[in-house]
Length: 306
Image (cartoon, rainbow, N blue to C red; front, top):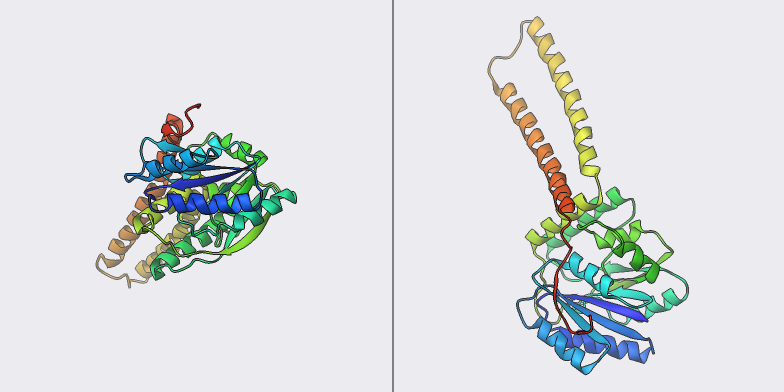
């Protein structure tokens, strides 16, 4: 059985169409399925729409969070709920083409355990948004050691992969990178990102920056290592400046004034504050992990048996 996981946040306009198009495809391809909508604490009628779809089709079920926990938590909840032999994670806005699910499933039948959805293009996005996203994934590619610039959350994973990921104890997850980290036999399918038909994207520059910082800290310690590298470079620079200053003093040509001193103090002070900020980010992440709070809280579900 294939589990289709659809995280949803304020998507009341898209729930019914997403359900209908997914069901139509899976029944056409004669694929046994379940569809799991995860309402990420929506403030509109998203959960009501999910309930309406579940009443019409017993293979559709939904869970609702007590508040907005974020897409990463919603994907984790979907994997926890999934009962299928494999699972596909897709979006409610249908920007990920539904027909690619059949192609992914076919590759899974051929023995692949992870089928990555790779974007051929990012669709129509603002220039600065596209630039920021490209820069972030280029940076993450260097940290992780794999090319993540065209990856997405749209992917199929085998039951073995699902069990491996849901067994991870960490609270702050980066699903897109964890599927690479987990290994397993993988392949790719390419797709064109479609335009959103209804509603607006929930991503803005602030949320994208927060997403980037959180995921970098949760997945790699490279920024901490960069502090050491930058400190070494700064130390060499300061050594060179010290030698130059000493020579000029001995030759009697030392410059008067505090301009150089002030600039050096600003450079060192700024570097220290930046380093403390990075270290503080990791300490905050450790604090969240140590508390051991759940990734999400489910307050309602359409399947009353659970």
